[in-house]
Image 1 (tube, rainbow, N blue to C red):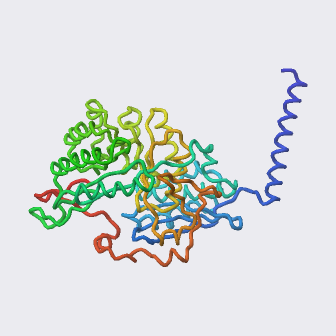
Image 2 (cartoon, rainbow, N blue to C red; image 1 turned 180 degrees about the horizontal axis):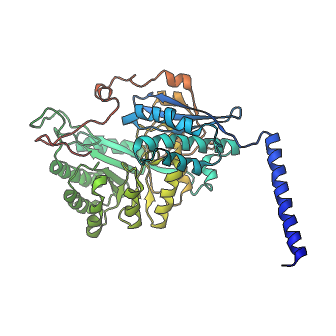
Image 3 (cartoon, rainbow, N blue to C red; image 1 turned 90 degrees about the vertical axis):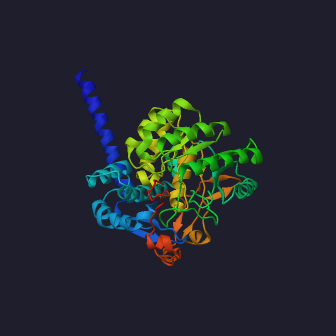
Length: 443
């Protein structure tokens, strides 16, 4: 290049730098400087008897703040100090616009990582930063992700009963509300079947606690599927949650036996520790499989997706660190034609639900969304809950998540304010179930 051309190019570069500097000054003058984290607080509340943890980030710009869900009901009292004592001092003063950078800095900051307590604490921060960015832009978060791929999220919800006719009757009521997908569960007489009552029967055992036997459960579940197909017809999509209670080789056989009922998906047929058995299942049947509710580590979901061993990835976004990593999991799934089915239980704040719905409408490889209704007290605390209509969950169109938290209302429902004695005794934790001989099982 000739000297005059070099000088011209250099002049153009300097002019660009000057314009950028001027633009930065103009933004600051108009109050559009990049906001910084001024404070991080935690809102701990249990309006529906389930412990919800919400992170609030306040910026140095008046009226600009954001909320994120950090709910880990079973260990909620550990997530609160993880945010307040560790992430807050680590993050004060940082610019809010570097969401991915902040996520990785938090992820590495404790050295040991991928645990659910740390992941949920990071998720609260991550979602709050996305909320702030949406409020700044005057856009819902789904617009920041590239906009909608669909208008709303098709959902399923739960039908259960102690007996098969009760489950089917409950399924009919759900279908009448406009749902096209129903998860069906039934109790096993005298046993602690997942998601359904055991009735008044009792089973002899060598201990006094809840009893579960896999063989009895499998026989009962197959009877439920046959009755459901007969009574509900072929148009309704059926789902079922095994909740990882089978021995791996039983899971292989069960998945084969279920194939003829054409479930929309069979969920958590294996425990995270046994995921290698998915290779055996895949070789022997075409039952659609959903997995991931208990996942917290990338090495759990990466092989299942990349080897196409499952059909739906079902992680809980706050358990893996928030919106930022969850959208990357969705992108990985799209490359291998694995669809999303984010975990959506009752112990999830409306902010966490909005994170799910945002991913649902913004990711091309959406599959289905689990729906749990919000209690009146939950709606009192969280104003702007997303709307359910005819089996579709609609995202808010307001800026950010479109949700405001009434902190005075939240304070009316502190942890420990509910009556359920077992959960109170366990501090919100998960109970134990044993086989007849007293062996603890996964669940």
